[in-house]
Image (cartoon, rainbow, N blue to C red; front, side):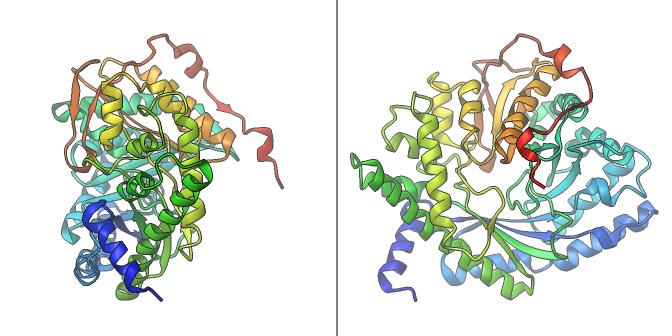
Length: 454
């Protein structure tokens, strides 16, 4: 039972500490839509999405009103489109038509993003998967709500370096295709290693083939809540610090569990997972960086930052896992530069570099996220950044991702503006020494020895 103190405490979190449910994401399988005729395929996809998700936005708003819990985004993820379009799409233009269909369906049901314009190529690429990947720049330039992801490696398969090299070109081409909007298309494109099937967060969400026909996932937030809690134990030892984070994560996750179960019951759709990730926004007081600074760092990026982030990530998971029937997705602490005011400030003051961000990804739940880099960065260098981050995920048996934005026409010292939850970002310098001969070798980097567990 929830007592009156807990109700009051939750209200305090919502009103003063920016507690919200960041997203309700409905996963929809499109496997039963597959067809060899492109027109029929598009019609089936549109009909299934608009039928399954027709009440998603309304249900989210009803729960917001009834419980007083802000639900910022209502989203959809679908089966990787490289699979769904494999029989009908003979060209990149055919895949772009599927992207337009997804965009129309997302608009019709009122969600802000739809994820799943994706390909899973951790060991190799089929011709269909390669066609989808090569269509990404055009698809993201001509749609508003479509998000794309490509999984190029895993602990079990190693790294597909042919796909890594190709994604360097695709990220650069996507930047060029959306250069009038500070290369915004790249903000909707994620390159993964060990991508999870049940991630509710964009831009990397897709509906895995192991999932049910439809499912409800929820992603909670609450960096402001954790920061406020830590401010009450300033100067205490690490035991107290850890207990405070753990207890706060439990309370935040209970809110997510409540919303997930309510949405599941009202929509008649199975409950999938609650993602425990702390997801920041550009709003003041809603920052993961500020949590780390509250722990005692003068600035995020200072020595000790990686240790503080490791502590935070671990305690969030320990507290959250007790608060929900099912946890999944990414689950930890996001460190997107453009979406976190504290990260933006740290970059601006010179305390945080892309190299330090890479070190931090060894212990957090995602990777190099929403980082603006100079527009003249070569595609081979972007591929090298992807390979480095994927190697961290592969060796450490965790999900890592790269969402970098080479902002065409801008360089170090300038700022890219993305708007809304995507925020803004100062452009970070990138190591200018070449890795072209390395990434052009072709083939696969083998799986690590500890992947052989059968």
